[in-house]
Amino acid sequence: MTTGSGLVVVDKPQGVTSHDVVARVRRLAGTRKVGHAGTLDPMATGVLVLGVNRATRLLGHLMLTEKAYDATVRLGVATTTDDAEGDVVASASTAALSEDAVRQALAGFVGELQQVPTAVSAIKVDGKRAYQRVRDGEQVELKPRAVTVHALAVGEVRPGPDHVDVDVSLRCSSGTYVRAIARDVGRLLGVGGHLTALRRTAVGSFDLATAATLEELAESFAIVPIAQAARGTFPSRELDERQVADVRVGRALDLPLDGLTAVFAPDGEFLALYEPREGVARAAAVFV
Image (tube, rainbow, N blue to C red; front, side):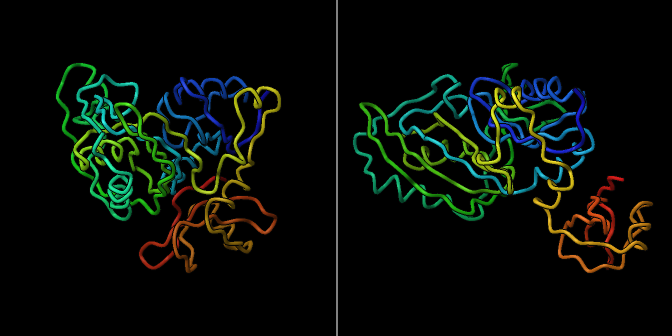
């Protein structure tokens, strides 16, 4: 089977890499041209957006959109990876930790933050992935970067015999590491912390309601056509035939835009992404 261009929204299972999911979708779609918008760790589950054929060029823009997660933070234990897959490096008693203290600490992680990414991330340090440097025994110190947590809701707080588990739901900017929040709130409370569960519930406008499991895709391969995907992700503008001719050759348009915008022909064909630059609308990516 071969398929057209569009997005495939997968509910990634635990224990497989994002690359594993791409390989599976390549076989199902009958094309090598498949990529994903934003990696999910093997431990994590949930929404993974894949582009097929021409829609792979949308992915870089999709990666910049807001994301949402459900997570469980374990306080009292710190690990090398800031999640449950790493080795324990420190543990501390949580007997004196009150629920109010936990909730108050997490409330401080809303808004604009300077966050140091987890050392085992895909960020490149002098051309080499940080996680590879850690695996090679190197000490990795990453620089803080600006991220935004738009909202963070604390659910159940569950004391255990030697730890406290906390369920949280959050909406955040692209590039936010939920593992780093678990690490940092643990440090703030003086007991250490790491992530034991992570489920991405949304990437931009795509959520779990629109996602399919790999088993469901094997039964019935569902693809969001590229025009529908673009219209559902970006503001959209309909163009006249003269403007369409300009877009087809990548010319600038005398068109007021508020930001990155999907532009369409009168018949509904998706043409390009345009953005305001130097007083006009200029092509960010042309798809025709």
